[in-house]
Image (cartoon, rainbow, N blue to C red; front, side, top):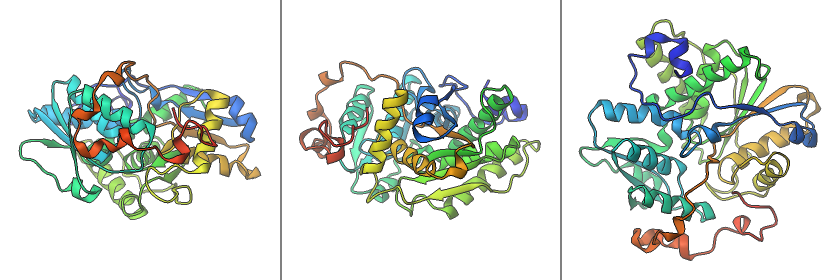
Length: 360
């Protein structure tokens, strides 16, 4: 049983849910990396192994979103994302596993090696892929009869998955798997991960500061939108189960300085962080989300006042292997607008000869 339903049994019969993941995800000490950067108590939360077929943070959200789709009798789900969207891929994988057809409406992004791989895997899963001119245009697609999943899965219901994650972490603290973290670093995209974690931790009585590192445009991720999402999720859970407490939003620090020039454009700092995590701990990070978030952690470790604190990095990436034979898929069967990701060069910091090793 997931942590949310263990802590608040009254919610178990009130929320749509389908089990997809392997929870709790482990917490590991990063001693070698901590020694290298001067962090004496550095840990990682391994959401990269959140499920057997495909990990990452999207699994927790999809457990509730696809649960709602099945509850409502849907036979088709639609979502949106950038061309290399991990969320769109996760939706294709897990919707297909439940017998649901899926469509992903995609918009363009800077090229990276992972984009072609994700597109081929989505094709393998039978997802229908369409292309929109922009994220705004993609968001306006509303076909009749489909169950619509928003960007990143960060609806009120999807965010509930990370309320459970916060409670899960609190239970691991109680079991002695790590001390109470004073700072938790996580990438901030569509904000469901950070908002849900903040609420779950507050409900559990932990005062961990969440350092949310923005990796998308500010119009998508900002304090006002995060606060609104947090409040709405809190209201939903308190309404469904009065035992769930009202928790004022507190302890979230938004960081903007690691975003770079645009979404999915890698930064030197982010790729240094990717390389360092791989070198010392064999951690799988990447340049769009987790590398930038980890770069913020590394920068903060230059402050002597933080070196004795318990620091937790939440790995939202997937580290499960992809099918070894994806190259047998013919990319020319994809919409023509997506062929550029197979025929044009990847961005400079993602080349195999890049000055900083690229993501896995």
